[in-house]
Image (cartoon, rainbow, N blue to C red):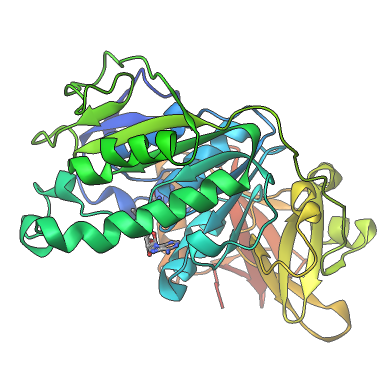
Length: 392
Ligand SMILES: C[S@@+](CC[C@H](N)C(=O)[O-])C[C@H]1O[C@@H](n2cnc3c(N)ncnc32)[C@H](O)[C@@H]1O
């Protein structure tokens, strides 16, 4: 799809789905693959924290400061569809961006919530893995944002340092005994990096686990004589600055024993099939109605405590008497007619649909799946014997 639109890239060795863009005839985000969420654009170095965390397949991960969702998405790929990633974001507009991105990528193994990370009201010992990528001074992004050094001059970073500590304290509380935390920033500031790791070791009792150097990256010598963390300086045309440390909570002490609950009003199996969603998706959870919208309730989300406010991946609108309208972006395919597009010609037609064109068809159904070279992209509406793409 991307090569037919003139893009070229090479695969990176440090992470199986990472690719380095070589040719970009127009903005990659405006490509068809970008529109349908098959790619996510981010700096090379910002992919390192999930590589350091490397949760097991099927694991539960909390991403404490998640928007726009680069790491939530990457972690969701690592844990797979049977795993689960909860992305937390304190700012409502940024939470909306996070939710949009997760839906665009079709990641039903994710959910989101909106709390101050230092006060996420989950029970202690709830999480196997935590990603903490807190707000920081961003000195490592100076190539892109030259003003950061002025905005976040030395003493101005003090409130950030204390917020990061509060976040670290809650992360330690939320980890299960033996659980793993990755702390990362995009700054080169010692106080927000190595000094915070020392705080986590000395004040919170976490153990630093050594990360092996990655040959694909030029790494700097860590400060304070610390061994086994990743420290990168910004390098023009290559990476932004980054810092990554992996910490583990000691074994012993109690884990939280969760209880399963029902969330929303799950749609009956038969109805799910009628919507053109294959039954096998229900192995991962339910598709449930919440007031006016439809969301995926992953089976791992069923263990959240009763009063915990969270939201599963958005799947569409719900009307009265359980009448639902699936979002055109729902890629979960099932027994529904499909319209196939092939090759370059097919891409041109898809571009036409996305810009408001319609095509005549003989489908009797209200919705059909749309695929390009066998890859399901989403759902088209059938109106007056014409196929249209409509997100309304
Ligand atoms: C460095 S960015 C996270 C980037 C994200 N991890 C990614 O890779 O896409 C930090 C985020 O933390 C959010 N934030 C700020 N204060 C927070 C707090 N107290 N609790 C949770 N999130 C917070 C910011 O709004 C911002 O979206």
